[in-house]
Amino acid sequence: MTHIDTHVIQKPKILEDKLVILHDYTLSKYLIDIVDSLKQDKAILINDVSFKDANKLMLELAKIFNLQDSLELNSNFSSTLEYRQKVGKYFMTVNKRKDYQFVAPHSEGSSKLGIQLAAFYSVDNTTDGGETVLFKTNHSSDCIKGLKENLAKGKILKKLSSADLTKIKILSRLSFPEDALTDGDEVLSEKEYKEGFVYCETLVKTRAVKSVILNKEVYPYFDSIERIDSDSPQEYLTFLKNVSLFKEPESDFDFSLIDDSHHNRIGSFGSKYNELFEGVLIKKLTKRQMLICNNLTWCHSVANWTPGSGVRKVVAAFA
Ligand SMILES: [Fe+2]
Image (cartoon, rainbow, N blue to C red; front, top):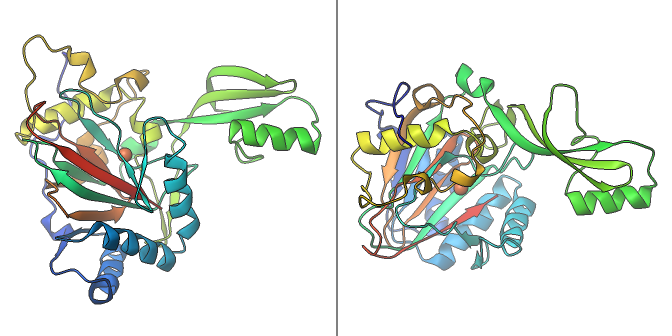
């Protein structure tokens, strides 16, 4: 992380008009307003909401946008992951952060998962940093179209029985024909799972995904795009410094670890934040605050904090 700069947001635009703040929350009073705000592609910050009500709200929103299955699936799936735990009915812990680590902006998941809605609930946050920064993706940017997405694909080499195909689908979590390797996909690694079937890690062209909230196609900057690009943490570090949110580590700190996704980066793909994003919303979530946004049009990120400066427990829900 020594080279910095060429493509950075020098003065990020703060999109205050894209944030709706609600006080004295009750579900019956605000559900319609929240739905309307999401349809206008705004983010919603709710003050002083109980965790029980946050869960109820997620369910009601999921019902309205027909995302109930996705909400259940994402929360249940989190309990099978080593790095996440289910909290309450629909929320999950976020990745554990090592000292001084930040999380660069991404829309959760991949184009295959197509997660539509994201919410963050602050159980407590007393650190000297840990601000949540939402970045609004610029869908007309050529930059997003030039990036690559890391997806798993499969190659079926011979005719397989339907029992074998079912086994393969369960083992590989792939579906066919959607996840079959196609011309133009770049194979990073392959592994023969079973005779006649090869599992591939690939790089594919980024693609548009339908937003059910906005009823239109958008180009999200998914985790599967962001996490592999070594340009992204450089851009994020510069951004954090520009807005004075960066907490400088001690002099003996190993800087290569500052990026939460450092182990996933495989090359320089060209993420340029001043082209990818229209602007930002910066919020330090405090106890009992909840932030909701369209996962496909907003990216979420987290600034670092000084180790030992406090407790940060923020949980997330996706549908
Ligand atoms: Fe995330």
